[in-house]
Length: 183
Image 1: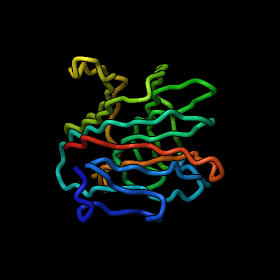
Image 2: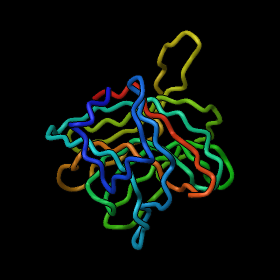
Image 3: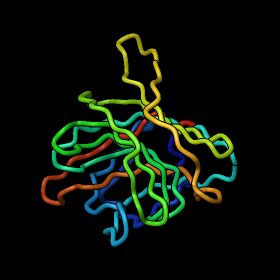
């Protein structure tokens, strides 16, 4: 899954992440790229892509413990332009959140309660259409995708597919795991 040589690590702090048995574990980073004036975030993992059409999926394991603590999957243009789906603590609720930020103005496009620790996340770009999906992991290991939302792509091509964590405390570390990445 993670041939790390193909991934760019933005604000890399290698003491806070590791790869074991094809699973990327990352301490949830402090900061957030939400809106203008965002705080720098460590250990953003960016896989550059050249294709116009993208279908990326990853399994995320995280039980958020504090407000806005999150881990997820995104199409990333830059810190002020991205489309993401995250597993996070949002307003005191364990949730999946679909956000589009364009020109530094984020908007929550959709959200649903989700209390399980493990979820399969997906993001698909076909032409100018982007959709985000999730699938709870079932006991029979079948993947039953549900669409959380759809939007139009941002201008230009994304730099790549991003795996990220935001909203950590820096005092009570929580870790997210990313596994079974495909695109």
